[in-house]
Amino acid sequence: MTSWKRLAAMATGLALALLLGAPHARAQAASRFMGSITAINGDTITVKPTQGDERQVEVPSTTQLKRIEPGQISLSAAVDMKFSELAVGDRVLVNLDPNATGSTPQALRVIAIKQEDVAKRQQEETEAWQRGVGGLVKSVDASGGAIQVTTGAGPTLKTITVQTTPKTALERYAPASVSFADARPAPITAIQPGDQLRARGTKNADGTEITADAVVSGSFRNISGTILSIDTAGSSVVVKDLITKKPVTVHVTPQAQMRRLPERMAQMIATRLKGMAAGSANGGAPAQGERPAYGAPGGSRGNGDLQQVLSRAPAIQLSDLQKGEAVMLVSTQGASDVTAITLLAGVEPLLEAPASQDLLSNWSMNSSAPEDAAQ
Image (spheres, rainbow, N blue to C red):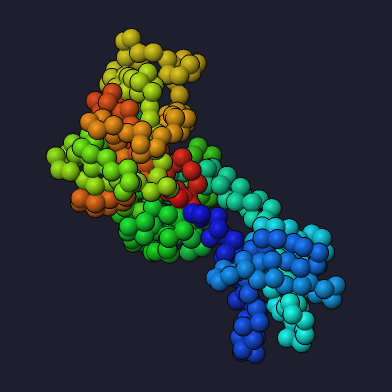
């Protein structure tokens, strides 16, 4: 999701639908096309349509030029703009002049969505998702519209109520896809315990509840195991699942998040997870010999900081993996053939900490806004 192309396409698609709404306009659909500006030369723009080859269009001074914001559903919100304000990368809807006689088609009207407006909307969307919550579904009250989600790991595990309303946009990842662009509307009844979920909206004062304006969910698989083989050309690895003891072919797409924990970092995370568990058993006191976590005052930080630590781990490529090393991953569902969403190497110390798999599950949704959570 990319997913942000989906946003721009949706916005221009809405404008297109408005322009082509009338029967007469539909009859003239061939004289209109939509795409992105790839070049501007004098009063001529080159546009790469959503489908097909590039097209050159003259934009004379008589052309009606309008600018519309992403997400607008009415052309009444469009404002006048100058030709000089058009730029490469802008999305445009071009209405050709049927009476033009020159060798190059002329535009009767151009409606533009500025590239910087799309970028601004992208940033706003990203920040909104980051301010939201993400985790594993604990329970679903479909009739009441409430979803309980657990976030964190070990003693830091907490439950957050995601309250939905009839206005909440509910989407669900496609079964074999890790792309947010492939997510489709789905009822709350499609959400099941164990699913990963991400919600954005308004939180209450103590952060235990969020009234969601958008929710995306999906069923994914957690795998911990050792690498049996690596097929760099085929972009896949075969992992022996430590739970099922069976081999699983893992396809690694360019959208997959791949990182390697440095040895010291992995040991610190494992020590913290095991130490917090021991501390919880002792009424919350730190385990003897436990180090303060990552320089935090008093040695205390929330699970969100662990997520940040994972996100700061060095990124790797498929070719950096080694046969025989341990990995943890979140993938699409599947018994013997899956697609990776998140793959973490250098995890040998973490495999001894039972809470570590839940930590990775949450990270795969929290580390980026859905497009892709998970792209």
